[in-house]
Image 1 (tube, rainbow, N blue to C red):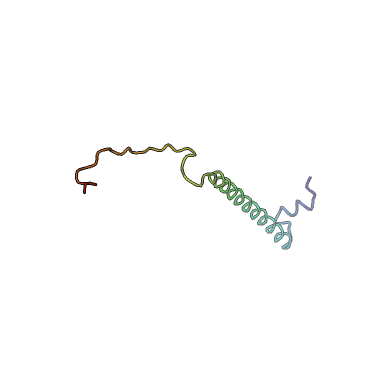
Image 2 (cartoon, rainbow, N blue to C red; image 1 turned 120 degrees about the vertical axis):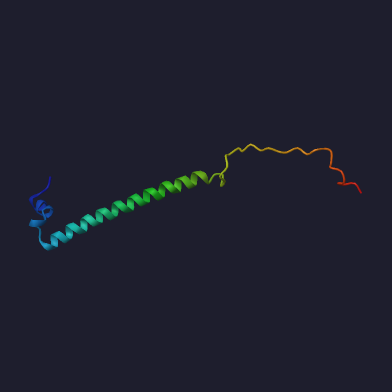
Length: 82
């Protein structure tokens, strides 16, 4: 529960110059802490996404299907005949 002295800190008209500066400092500090937490959370999410994709180190599915072209048994005329 707020005390009477806490109420004077919230009302700028009842604050001294030093109390106003302290209040501004607290507000800015809370905003800075919030911004740092948001950035850390975003960086942590991005790192987890990178780590999840790092298992293969490729942008391919884990078991890609391969296709192989067959060679024709007959060679075009003029190749390999000497």
